[in-house]
Length: 407
Image 1 (cartoon, rainbow, N blue to C red):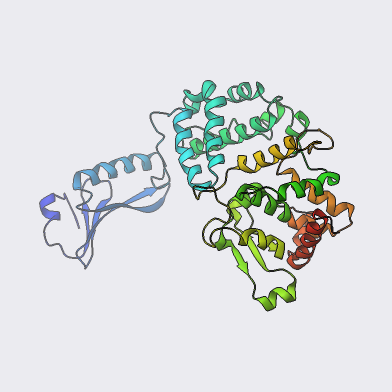
Image 2 (spheres, helix red, strand yellow):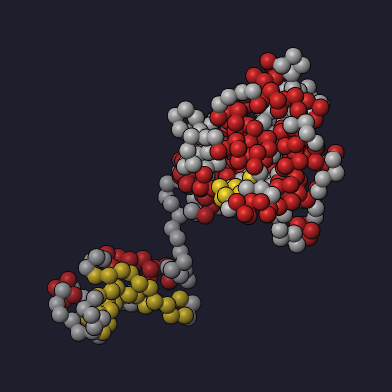
């Protein structure tokens, strides 16, 4: 039925059905058998009838429902579907304001505190001085090019990450209808025409690696040092893992075999590193040999972190790096990279392991999988469904024997 609705009428005991407000907007209230009352609006757009839900009564009062219906009616008269229409914000926020919102989202995604800090620091240091106060809809490719050009050749990796982070912030603004596409920070077909490619701008800097000829002397020196930092560095060397993977290692990630299974397989357990701590964001399994277990079995407890600081917190990356630096300066000859002559660092130990495996003609697949690297072409990798962990365990046993001078 149609009649001019009133609050008094709507509050009465109405029979189930639809009651139209006689104002030409198609506004009606649908009363169900349960007694609930819901606003609805029927409109015709480009010859097609649609129905909109406007909320329940009395949460949405009559006056508000009429106001919404009038706006929707005006849009439909222009051929615009109110269901899909989104009003653009009247006040366009600045880049810095949008970045704060995006940083909150990224903080929920990122687990590494260092990466969280880097996201904010790069934007504050390099982007904010140029575009921080600008409304996002005024930012052009010239602005982005200008701020990147200053550091592109000297700090190519930092500049490349900065560009990607600016792109993420502006993507958010585009989705929220605060600015129009295309994104001025995109690379392909945009900034790629204004800046040299990343690969041509700089050669990747390799981490200084321990030379094989020094490995046994270095290993012996490391074995003389006490503390969880030295023990974590030994474990990192034996597993050929990254610093963050070892420092974040917990006992919950360690699965030990029964004595019978350990005797059959030739190693004592498996350490499963969760995807969130892996560079490639994929879960990675590491075989635990008897010698590796001897290192971690000496820790205080089999709960929480395997290697922790005196305050029972995760070791810092500097702890392992400082250990290697002290070893370098305390040794008569030092431990330097063959090419750069820079002191070897923890990450370079992975390169030392890979060089040893190659020179001794050990399985390429086993070595690459131990390092959590992809190998071969995409087709080969797609069909390689095993992590050959038993073979990798034997490889690590031989690697330890080499370090001990027993090979």
